[in-house]
Length: 140
Image (tube, rainbow, N blue to C red; front, top):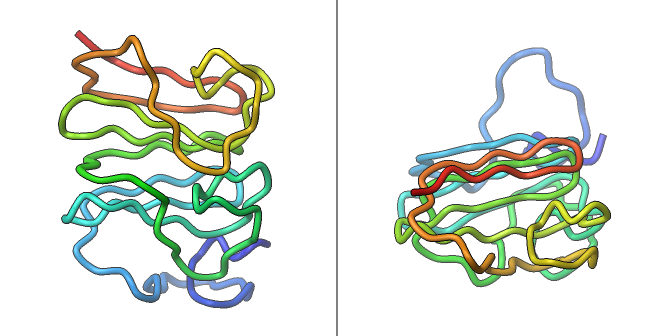
């Protein structure tokens, strides 16, 4: 569909293929038509459809290959909802971006965000997950 395999084209593949340009991956997540990966250096990479800014690169441009998510460091985990994305840092902070029609980004608005926003009021987060129009965070 939108390049959610990250291999530089929209061809369907019946066997596993390696994502171009990524190495040392420690975490992955897949949403509706987009994918996320965390490198061992704590950076986040995204590819696929970019409606609502779900790739976090400050654009709405679909990407056939990975692009770095803007402004994130120290990330250990990611989660992909249908059209939004989430990241958890080693310090227990949560960042979200993408579609926000039902407030799934947790920033107190319904404004779509094409770049990550830090979610306030959460400390000690250690897990996260996203669905169609919701997000969940485990914290102390």
